Amino acid sequence: MHNNKENIEVTADKTSASQGLWCWSATEIARGIRTGEISSREAVQSCLERIEKVNPLLNALVEVSPDEALAMADEADRSVARGEALGPLHGVPVSVKVNSDQAGHATTNGVVAFKDNVAEKDSPQVANLRNSGAVFVGRSNTPAFSYRWFTNNDLHGRTLNPWDSSRTPGGSSGGAAVAAATGMVPIAHGNDIGGSVRQPAYCCGVTGIRPTVGRVPSWYGPADADQALSVQTMFAQGPLARTVADLRLALSGMSGFDPRDGLHAQVPLLGEPLNRPLRVGLLRDVGVSTPEPAVNAALDAASDWLTDAGYVVEEISLPLLAEAYRLWYLLAMEEFRQIMPMVAEIGDEGMQRAAAHYYAVAEDWWGPQPGLSDYMNGYARRGTLIAQLQQFLEDYPLVLLPVSAEQAFEQDADIKSVDSMRRVMAANWSMMAIPVVGFPALSVPTGVSGGLPVGVQLLGRRFREDTLLDAAEIIEARAGIFSPMNPR
Image 1 (cartoon, one colour):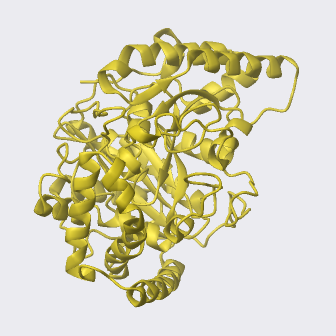
Image 2 (image 1 turned 90 degrees about the vertical axis):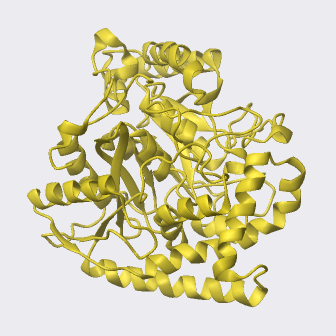
Image 3 (image 1 turned 60 degrees about the horizontal axis):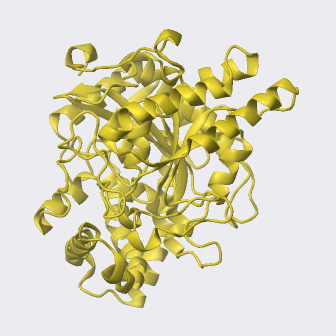
């Protein structure tokens, strides 16, 4: 993987006006609209044509709204002509995940029973995208209840990985990752309580950031319902995009204040300079799942590139993340147990089997029916782990680690058997560990191995997403960009 180009097998479309504005990055589109080089209508129309061409092959966007999108684009162009103040995403085509409220559209969350659940107003995360000038072109697929790392449900069907249809595109923001990877949109909205931004980005060869909990105002579920404690403390909204610069742009557009989120924190996106040289802890394994050779090679390459850029990279041990991984399956899954009667009634078979397998594996750690004292002690322990990680990051402001110990899993590996789910859960240990502690993390591709994308993850201090983005840009500059691509 050190000589990254040797392993690349990509059918990619280079950015050029002659090949369509859908190839452009969000940063390029936003700049072009601001300067009058292009119009929002032209950019949106180009993305709609791309969607028409590739979406039927992949099923990433389960609802496309050309009339609404073009009307939003035309209004964006009129705002430019009037000389009005423009938001960071002004006129840029964006997709919204179907588990978030978008006014006038059904928040299906991939569930047949929710197909007519039309939202009256935007959720905070969607409102911020709209307020920043984004143009909504479609809604991206998710597994039922946004519950799996495999994007398939009885309402909308299966989303395919454009690199290899036999492999998962990731989940739950699988539709978002595929839409970004294939040029349907330059920015796709996602959210992450158990890897749902980072893992799909990894599987599809794009970038994705899970911000600090509280960075982006959020709401999940009915506006008048109480949110579970795990949702309040672990759930984060974040963008997926083809470039790190576009993640930075999208994050700026998504982070505005919204009073509906009681945990939102108005913290500057750019923090104080850190002491140089920055120390990076290289974490390969926490004793849960040994990384595949391609994953270790990606870590080696990223480590070398950061070292070349002046970072000091040192191998570390961080066992608290193994404990946090197991703790997720107590705190989040015991809260989810409350809605299992509804899941049994309206959930699809894949989701029901995945739930049964999650609980079967978690029983090894927490027993068949954890009690209230287990739950209370679990949250007490969570606070200790957060403090321990915060102290560790004083010495190592960044941690370089796998997104997963494996590349994209074969489709439905989670529901084949309990043992298969055990393997999937173990490989994705960091997908759960990081939400438990609530710190920011980012997925960035490093190359292609065996025909599938591979990449790394960066973990950093709370509300220091800027340090993750800076390091990811260095990795991206050396690795290259692997999308937009044509489906194989």
